[in-house]
Length: 273
Image 1 (tube, rainbow, N blue to C red):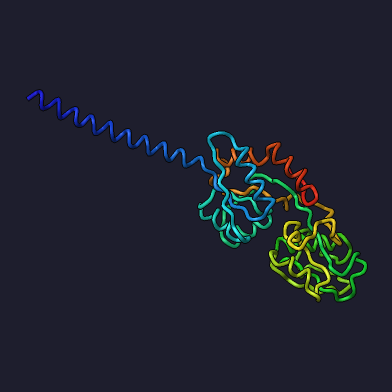
Image 2: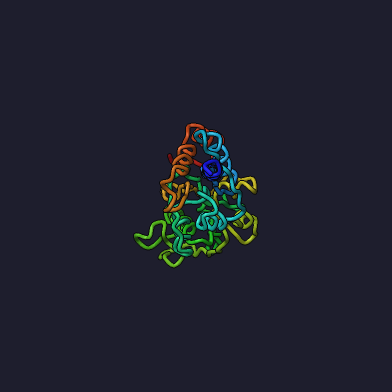
């Protein structure tokens, strides 16, 4: 009788041991998977920073690039918790997404300031712009405000007092050349440069590079740099202080990343950290 009891106890003990072992293995798997940091990005400079950060991240973590093709997916994926972070935008653009999509995205670290400005196929100086010239502006509010602030600073237009980088076309109080405005999606502004009826187009170095231009070719560059427009590492409120995001931030602000920005991309941007 005792023998049967002991056998039963051993069998039960064996089940418990196997069960715990299985749970431990599963827990280890979850822990390992939690070390994968998924980061969405979409243009050459930001992608290269993410790829370099993957080499610089502390042991145990793995940075996984999620490459997207537009300015919508990287925020949608992050807000839906399908990725851990993104590196593709500035703070005003992110804030606009939060307002429109009830998002909870936050800037974790500013990485670099792009050299933005206006380009013209026909004119070499803004003084040459004729009356009624058509100017292509980005269609999203945050970038439109930045473009108008550059024109205001150059004296081509005058914006209402106090609007700063938040101005819209409706905030223009003086337009001596009677410039006309053409609203174009940010990704299509480079193509607008070659249109015959467009005198000048706003753009970022990455997009204008598609047609062989650099900031050196700009007719007008931004002089007053506002760090709010720095291209930044973005996460969510719920994960911004996580170990994964801390490790990613450290890797993206490493000496190697700074060296990359200051050498390969010196003509188009400046580090913001």
